[in-house]
Amino acid sequence: MHPKLEKALQRWLAAGLLDSAAAGRIRAFESKEDSSSGLRWPVLLAISLGGLLVGAGVLLFVAAHWEELSPSERFTLVLMMVGVFHAGGAFAVERFSALASVLHAVGTITLGAGIFLAGQIFNLAEHWPGGVMMWAAGAWIGWWLLRDWPQAALAAILTPAWLAGEWEVATERMYGANEILAQGLFLLALVYLTAQVPGQENYTRRTLFFIGGLALIPCTIFLILSMEESWWHYGYGLPISTTYGILGYTLGLGLPVATGYWLRRREALVYPVAVLWLVAMGTLDPGKKFQLLNILLLCTLGGAGLTAWGTRDGRREIERLGLLGAFASVCGLLFWAHTEKSLWIYPLCLAMAVGMMAWGVRATNKDGINTGITTFAVIVGFFYFSTVMDKLGRSASLVGIGIVFLVGGWALERTRRRLIARMQTGGAS
Image (tube, rainbow, N blue to C red; front, side):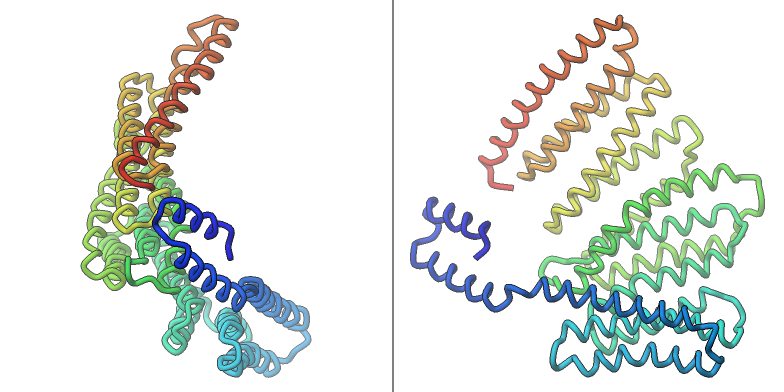
C-alpha cells in the first residue's frame, strides 16, 4: 500500500474517524489493487516510449532511402507506413488495449507525414494548411471510431493549428491579424484548461486540461506581444480589412465559446466574461503610460478570476495558475511604478497581497496565503531597492537591507503561521 495512504489511515484512526476493522479492510483492498496493477505505469511508459521510438525509426528509415525510391514505391511506402500501425492497433485491441491506443496514435501521427509526403510525390499545389486540415480530419475520424484520448488530443491540437494556418496565410502582411489570432488561441487554451467538470471526469477531458495548462502561459505571452506588435505596426503595411476582422473575431472567439458550451453546457456562461476581458485588453495600447497600467490591472483581475474559477470547480491546479498570473501582474505593476515614479502603486499592490491572504484564509487554501506573503515580501523589497536604497550611503543601505531581511522575514513567517492556524480552525485545505 502507498505510504501516504498508510499515514492518512493512521491519522484517521487517531482522530477516531475509522475503527481498526475498517482500516484493515481498506489495507486489504489497496494491497490487492497494488498487487494487480503495481507494474501498470512502468509498462505504459515503456509502451509509449516504444511507440515513439518505432515511429521515429520508421520516419528516419524512409527519409534515408527516399531519394532511391521511384514515385510509385514512395506512395506505396507512405500507405504502408500509415496502414501498418492502425492494423497493429486493431490486432492488439482485444489483447492489450494500451498497446492498441499507442499504435493507433502513432498511425494518426504518421498520417500527417504521409499527407505531406504524398503532396511532394505528386507535386501538388502548395497550401500547407490544407494538409493540416486533412490530418486533423483523420484525427477526428480516429476519435469517432475509437473514442480514445490520444486521438482526442491530436484532434484538439491539429484543428486550431489548421485554422491558425489558414488565418496566417489569408492575412499575411496585415497588422492587427496576430492580435485576433492570439485572442482566439488564449480563449481556446482557457476552454481546454477548464474542460474537467465536477462529476464528468474522464481521460479525454483530463487530456484537454493538460493541453490547456501547457498552452495558457505561452498563449498569454503571445497575446501581450501581439498587442505591442499591432500598435507598433500601426500605419505601416495594410490594416486588416473589416471583412477579415469580423470573420476573425466571429470564428476566433465564437468557436472556443461554442466548444466550451459543448464541454460544460450551462456552466459555460463564464466564457462570455472571458470574451469581454479579451475585448477590453484589445482596446488598450501598451505603448501609452496609463493604458499599460490598465493592461496590468486587467491581468491582475484575470488572475483573480481564474483563481475563483478553480475554486468553483475544485481544481487546485487552476487556482495555482490564477495565483501565478496575479503575482506576475503585481510584479509588472511594481516595474511600472519604478519606471513612472508612481508611489501610489505600492499601497495598491499591498492591498492586493492582503487580499490574497484573506482569500486564502476564507477559502482554506494555503497557496493563497503563501502567495500573498511572497507578494508582500516582493513589494517591500522592491520599494526598498527602487526608492529607499539610493537615498542612503553604501554602508547604511547594506545595513538597512539586512535589517529588512531579518526582521521582515521573521514577521512574515510569524504572520503566515498565524494565518494558516486560523485557516485550519475552519477546515483543512
